[in-house]
Length: 346
Ligand code: SF4
Image (tube, rainbow, N blue to C red):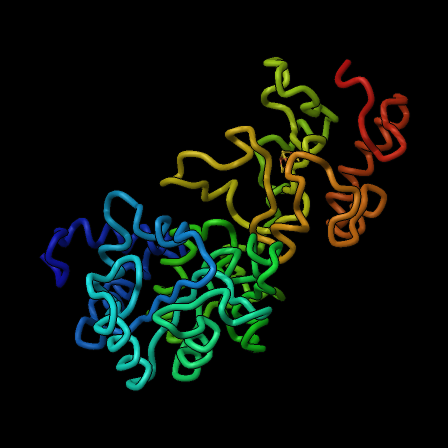
């Protein structure tokens, strides 16, 4: 057995190999990952705050099966405060939070957005959540915003609370954003393990997201991309003949969304949104939720991108593909004024 009481050494190393895969590292990193996780005497403290959220990211984090990601990670770190998971409550819980903040040098994870229209929109233990975040951020060695709400405001930002993501609220650009709704378990665990392993945040993109998880366009790895290129779009949800076709005309935001969902998938690699027929909702992007709805309607302008300009944004390869595709559709007289396909498939 290793330092973790409930799993064997073999299972533990298997888990380390899995983490190496999550991080895109070679198998030679397995001993280093094992060592980083086994530094039990230096368990880094972690505070997990929840504001305007649905606890979906917490469920995503603790809901993994075998080996239990949360079990290992929560054994590796010293989880001092987490409203949904911790046994303590009331004054005892608040004291744990205060003591950890006083101690300093902890990893701060924030789930949920922060109201700015009025502090009273989110109160924890008679204290505005916004003040708790400000205080906790001061002594944190790393700040991780998990989920669309904490990263960019998410669904609450479409409401009346003036909800903001952590980075925007704190005006800090070193916040690690693990967007998507909910945050992907492997994105959370991979980021924490990367920090434990290398003592720094992974390389981030312009939106503060780890490039190792968010550098690829959903559209470029989608299994329906071939149908897109051939102009084979789903236009009727009730037609079983169309069930595997590209969902672009049904509002799929895959061409505008960066995440590795098609490769990593969800629920232990079982499925992902497009595969189950829903289309991509764009939940990894800063404009989610308001900027991505209605989900099942194709928006002509997403972040200033229209069908006419889409190729310029997505790059040369895609430009050729999409350009050829739409030129082909126009030649066949199947494109409407807005770029919509008329009459479905031949
Ligand atoms: Fe896949 Fe959506 Fe792109 Fe179609 S538009 S290929 S369904 S990501």
